[in-house]
Length: 370
Image (tube, rainbow, N blue to C red):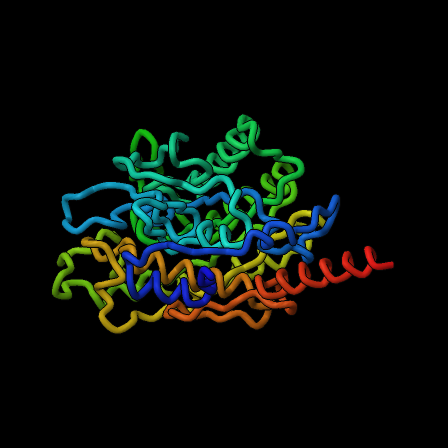
């Protein structure tokens, strides 16, 4: 009999053994346990209900530098991005949200699958699928990303934008903080001018309202801002460049600005106007009290700003855990190698699905006897 690799053991192996083979065998009965419900609200959502994944954000979500070994390897590895990557090749699987969801629904669509040269503040489809994040993006480009996401969903024949449940992850703010101390810096595609907490929150809210009005049946992970000042601890560290890519890293008011943005995001997510029966925005706070773990450089790419594959994997597990934790009781730390498993208190777990299938079989057998 083939061994069933549990979700928890898989998470641990993919984090500790990057080349662990994804020889995951799930019983054929698993797929038969899914219930086709014609209508249900977001609070009844289960992992196997998610049919589409999408992500918005900046260069980290775009996978910039994620698998680079040297500073000159300037590539976006979108396939290993923590919230949207779907890389699966040579019997290895990246630890990402879409790959976790495939334990429950093998037909999840939208994950980015490849790599490419970086295109600052430009988003193209290709193998990025519904990863509309842009390297260099600030909050000012979120509306562009949201509109692009909708267009892609509408064009794809394998996605029903009105009926398919979607998991959308939005994380932004790093570039807003890192360029908040400069004025008048613009490029043909990027705009780092007039960055304030007020403008940041306004941009995020406008993008969320657009999604609510145009992308129905969506559960939005609003991942809170990370306080980039923690990167001061590894600036000039062995293996890191002396100058951080975060231009404003040593500004004295940067920490206070990050806290204001975090508080504003919390208030934004709590707005009742962003919630309907089939759309909700949930704040995921695991970056709020992020502290550098032991051996911090291993979590970062050669520039010591973007995530390495280890950093992406840890972010994926942290987000997954937040998704399963109730509002008001979510963890706010980043250092987690232990993944939580769904349960009847939050969302359905594999064992419960199998139990349901067994009950259905027994009922069927009793009906035949009668």
